Length: 397
Ligand code: SAH
Ligand code: SF4
Image (tube, rainbow, N blue to C red; front, top):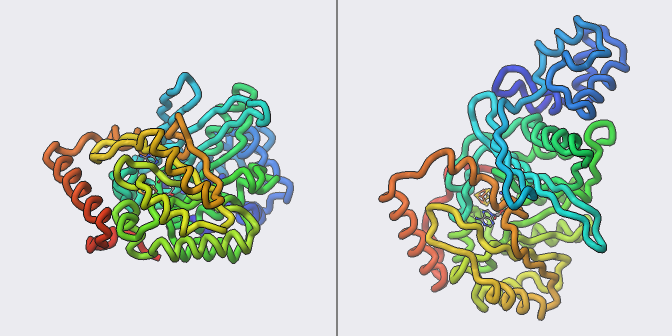
């Protein structure tokens, strides 16, 4: 029916259906063409979670729709409000019991900027890349999300906001998972988010973040501008990036930046780079200068984000003066830099944390061993030695 397939529960989620697939299903039943529009409006505007909610449809069609599709692929939603109400983390359970997260962040209006409501969504349950400072990386890989499972995170947040007379203004794929390792479904989702007949959010309001899947970046470049591309850089030196982003052993940082540079040139859109600042690990002058050398002259924006503490790592956030010094060295080379001061959650750094907490702590000796290995690996990397650890399992392209 669609590249998303039938999904884990046998019935595809209706929000993930391409309009022509839905039309095809209706045609087979001999329904008039305008029905597709009615159904789509109900899915995207009324936010119904069952065909029964589409009162304008004949009863037999409603029954058939309920038998063929799922109107909501999120089986349960467990909400935690933090930061004085400005951040809402939701742990979603899917039909097969897998847990994923989304984070809704509210930003009040400021002098030059309107009020914003940004949703950070997941593209996979868990993640195979295994960055050691990331709560999702600690969980390992679960599975790819279906298109509808990605989109239903957005529909839920949109409904929550609509209840308060607000609208979702930005969507970032910075939750659990590596979006470019589930690219077909991510592209289908972006298509639905952009489509004025479905969600109708402009491409400029959507950001997709990658840890550096080079073939995926090249595929996006060939498609033309669809959204803002963010690249999780974290380090400009291969030895250190091998430790912080294990995918670097497959696609080294030079190749990642070259692909991002081509992307910016071809689309005319600035690429964002994310750098999680970890005290004493990637925040030295040597690292700042290596990064400046790598990015100088490119159409980029660098975001420096103090690391959000996570269990199982020996690391902490860089102190603010160190981050400011790092920023200064990049700016001296003409690179645009923003420091995210207070909310690590801003880039989804908090995503995966609820799921990790619920998964429970591993035994203390395992945590101690993990921390020790990271200390040794980062110390070796700081001396410039490349890691000889194998690629994480499950990363294929
Ligand atoms: N897998 C993709 C997108 C999801 S992660 C990627 O890595 O780009 C979204 C962002 O949050 C990434 O830049 C990631 O490096 C960052 N992040 C993860 N854990 C973090 C933490 N503990 N503190 C700060 N940023 C973190
Ligand atoms: Fe995966 Fe991104 Fe976390 Fe790395 S930072 S483990 S790529 S979700």
